[in-house]
Image (cartoon, rainbow, N blue to C red; front, side):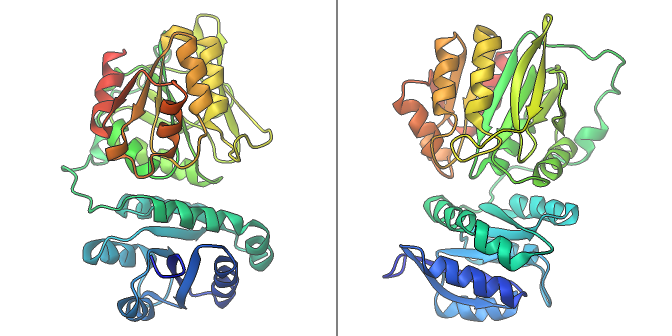
Amino acid sequence: MTGKGIGVVIVDDSAVVRQVLSRRLAESAGIEVLGSASDPIFAMTLMNRSWPDVVVLDIEMPRMDGITFLKKIMAIRPTPVVICSTLSQRGARATMDAFAAGAAGVVPKPTTGLKQFMTDDSGDIVAAVRAAAAGKVARLNRTAPATPAAAASRPAPVAAAAGTDRVIAIGTSTGGTQALETVLTALPRSSPGIVIVQHMPEKFTAAFAERMDMLSAIEVREAADGDPVQEGLALVAPGGRHMQLLTDGARFRVKVSDGPPVNRHRPSVDVLFRSVARVAGRRALGVIMTGMGDDGARGLLEMRTAGALTVAQDEATCVVHGMPKEAVRLGAVDREVPLTAIAEVIRSHG
């Protein structure tokens, strides 16, 4: 931290973006803009003079792309990085690569009306920078990751996929993309049906689900209204829409709908967890993972009251412990476990 708070460097080839973000962040208490650069080469020179607490980084830039620069930062001196990327499908997929490389968060920017959008919605970048600064950054010392062959080796789908009499509900936010990868890639095809809320903007959830599907033995896809909850399937709530669990006879399905944000989020973990408490009760397992704020804590308490087993990721393995910490404070958690133990808890619940 600098004497004025969180030191930030902005790296974007758009002069308008640099100007708007610099002004917005500089106006925020506890944040100091150390400088901005039009590409990673200039940025590295700037950062070597005064290393920032957080980097705000575009992806498509001249001389060096943002993902290459992100990997370089993580190799030299791991630092929280917030990606500021376009809402295009191409931008969303590139952002998923950035998450895999260690990015702490993402703030979308449109391809048109940029100055007005950044002025109206720049509170998101302030929150993202604060969350990134509060989180933990570590080198990605993972074991050999799953590969796209995991999806290729899955058995072909059958006409009537198996339903599930149990359901796993997962809620997460900051740091959740990496945490979910750890969990989902460790699950067998026979896992109970899973419903997930990951705080993420519209368009990015589809790219995230597609990437998880490639890496996992289970099927992972962005949820559509009416999708059944099935064994070996994880449904991710679409960015910008809420997801709830409903009963369909003896089976479960999801409802995807519009509605006002809850706890400042859409999708909201609380919306999902409360619906799971109502319709699944003791047949459910609730998991709250890394994230800033308190979304999901009250819903998890409702799940526990309804007889569900509830689990929180422990503080040591969270990027940000806010959501699990609040759930524990409310008495909503049966067990706290490290990230690497969550898949085993899910497997044992089948």
